[in-house]
Length: 239
Length: 216
Image (spheres, rainbow over the protein chains, first blue to last red):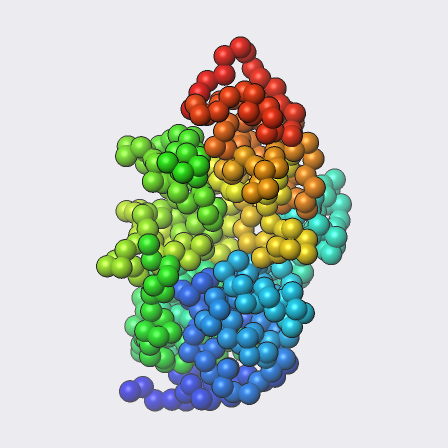
């Protein structure tokens, strides 16, 4: 077992309990994942039990009823969701309709760019997506060299919760298959970045060519078990 | 063959070797079942895969490998995985030859409404606006009428639009239409249907080129 030392930038391996204790009520939290793949299920479990509340969660979608961040919303500890869609989550749609949770929708790739630009130290992006739609009514529309465009503000968060396929103790991360999604973008866009992974390696354990998130962006690496209850194949999505 | 299969079968014939396509959730996902064995193409899914293959089975489903609708997939040789910014660079950067989407309404000028019914249906935006606005060709695959029997092809959209003047082709169980220069043209009629039925069930104004309208 590798030694734990949370204060050492040359060793970011942190215990699950300590990592969760760093997250506070009222904070904004980016959560990686698109559906189950890349959703940091174990860190979410930790949040669920930690007693934090009034969270703002930024994620692609709200997982599905009873899964992932849906459990945080269902428990009533999420004040606001900044999200792309809720197509697979009738329960959160119902809570939105009952005004039990505030929802801010963005086009999926625009949400990604708002986060990417936040991580890149930019103030925002300029886009023509949605200029002819009702989403322009609630956004800053400008004339950009003769073209109608929307100014989209960058998003940063207090915390990002990431699921990586593997991490080294320096905090270098790599992702796999469709579990990349928002993870590498969010890992660059928060003040406190906590990555869970099934596989923790010594420095050099990830070939430098295959590091997707350089360690400078990551604060804590948490080793988690690949629990089939949390990470297994969802039978209802297999033909 | 159900009406959905009928639409998917016709839609599959719009695709040819070398294309990169995106399949919206629902009916569009049936299209690969009807592709000619010899057609080689790349299927993009918004969640970050290019080169998606057939649906996975219990035996080969991988928990970290899904499509944008949540279904487990296989991938073909030459596939790639990437993050959501890259995925939408493919979409907005104009790398999709065709996107197939469903519709609530399509106007005769090619405006598409498919994301919200204010007060009733608001699951969010997802990738729809970007796909509709930026795919090189947008093909709408949809039932010709709503469940209440009202035409989905109408002079002007009554619902909030997903994007304006974005639809290039519409395939329903009754007909194939094309939109060129803000005008709707009837291209083909289903063999089970007739010009009279299409005229009766289409609220949008459409034109016909030539005398004979091919069947499909």
